[in-house]
Structures are given as structure tokens and as C-alpha cells.
Image (cartoon, helix red, strand yellow):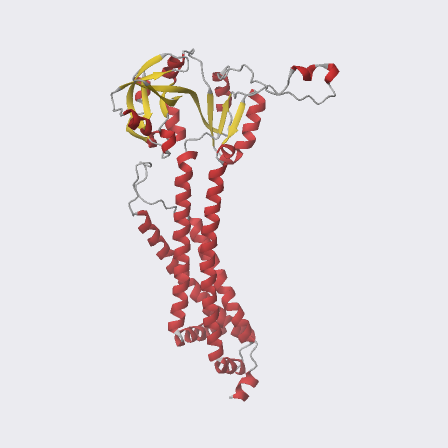
Length: 419
């Protein structure tokens, strides 16, 4: 019965100051709505910006780097074993870019349960011939099927079809920037000079746009067969092995393991794109800080309203305690008021935040550098809603507990005597 009375009294006190109660609930509503929409938008933006690079970057890359020898001849001499040897102008070793026994390595990596897929690649510098001018470029020999499966290759092709690289001999997909400079169109033939000075005619079958203009001015894509022919290499030539993992977090450890086992140079995605992860982390921290600040501000509003309510209802509190209500009961009354505001504001805030997110998601956002994006990015992760509701209820509880603790200590004798 006491619970029923506590509920009725809490409802009566809220209705007595319904305007202030409504303002407090609206404050919680807007705080949660802005928290959800802000975090959803910022995380969507992070995914968009990082995806421009990370989608096209292998989690682990195996290759032969051009490095100087770690052991010099003088280090092998016994008479200089305990000396510090300083050698200047050390030249790189005569090491080929080709990965020896690449097919066996690929088969071995594919059998690892942590690996999602493997794609071979050949990279080489080329020159696009424009009459008397040679334009610097980079050709990427790829397996179109694996590139599309593992690295979303088709999402960045704005014209043409990646499968045509395998079916049309001596074909190329140009970066949009390079195509604009050469004024190339689908079906045109362009002249490409290999590093060895050989000149080849390649048919343009598509255009590629990554969203990074400087890269699109130089890079192009061809099949592995066409690239080998361009470089004059054998049918087993591969310069890079790209590995996609089921869990990107294990990339550094697995890259080190591959390097030691296969005796190749490796590069993990965290090392290659550390600046992107740092930028995403900073943006996320700022978003959480702003959202949590809004919730704390709404909590202060509830605290002030309950404080004023207690001050105005001192005589009511005294009468309640005089008629048998304990301090704990009075405490429950005001915490009930605070949590009621929190629950109402949380429910309305989640709904309103979802509607704001839908509105942002419907706003057109089309720029030439990102052909796959048509509207502003939004992430509808359920964890944003959960965090907002939990933090809002925690804030409103604390905001109600402090005034409730004050009300529970009211001495009815002092109040009634003063009246």
C-alpha cells in the first residue's frame, strides 16, 4: 500500500509543477536526441573517410622491399668482431621485387583459419605517352574477382566493368584524374611505356575513382596477364600478396609471423594507415564529449527543478513525515519524480534522435570524388541508443538523489512550528 501512496504523491507533485517538469523532460529528450544523431553522424563520417583508404588497403601486405643489407662484409671479419664499424653510402642489395614461389605462399596463407582471403598483385611504375610528354603513372596488375570480393573494387569503378580486364586482352581501367588529363574515353587506345622502355598499346575499358584526386591522377588497373606482358615477366611473376583477415586487430601480430616464416617484408594496416585511425579516434572522442556534456547539463536542470520543488513543498514534506512517512519514503518520492522525467525524456529522445538520423540520412550529398555516396553518412548502431539511455537515467537519478536526500532529512517539528 505504501508503494501506491508514494506513486500517487510523486504524481501529484509533478502535476503541481507540470510546466517545470515538462521543461526538464524536454531537456533530457533533446540531449539524448542530439547525442544519438551526433554520434551516428560522426561515426558514419568516420566509416566513410576511413573506408576510402581502408577498404582498398590489405590487412597484411607481403612484398620484397629494396633495403640495404643488415650485415656488411666487415662485420664478418673476425679481427673486427668487437669493433663498432661505421660505413657510409651503403647501397641496396641486388634484390628482385618478385616474390619467389608466390603460389605456394598464397596456398599456405589461405589455409590459415584467421585469413578471409588472399589476392595477388603486381605493381610497377609506368609512363603514359602523350605525344612528346610522358605522364608518370602506376599500374596495378590485379585479379579482378578477388579485388572485388576483398577490397570493394567495383564500388570505385564509375564506368566500365572490372571483369572485362580478364576477357579483353591488353585492356586497362584508368584513374579518373589520369583519364581527364589524357582526355581518354571508353574504347580509346593509349600508349604506355614500361620501365624497360618498351611501348604498349592498351584499350581503355573503364574509369576508377577512389576519392583521392592525387592517386587517381597516376594509378590504373590491368589484369595480371596484361601487366606481366607489359613488364616482360613470366607467368608466375607476382610482386605483392594482399591478405584480408577476419579480424583486423590481429594484423600487426600476424604480419610479424608471416615475415619471420616466409622471409619477406610485411606491412600491416595499422602501420600503413595510423593517421586515419588517429583522426577517427579524435573525432569520436569529441562527439562523445559533446553528447555527454548535453546530458549532464540536462541533469543540472532536473536538479534545480527538484531543489525548488522541495523548497516550495517543505510544509507538505513535514506533514508526510508527521503522518508516518519515513525519510526513506520521502527519498523514494523525489527519486521517483526524477526517474519518471528521465524515462519519459529517454523514450522521446530515442524516438526523436532516430527521426533526426533519418532526416540527415535523406539529405543529398553527392560529390564527384566519391561516386558511391549519395546522402550524408549515418551509423544506426544500437550501442549509441543504449549508451544515451543508460547515461540519461544515471544522470537523472543522481540529479534527483541529491535533493531527495535533503528532503528526507527535513525535521517536521521545525517546519510545522515555523508555520
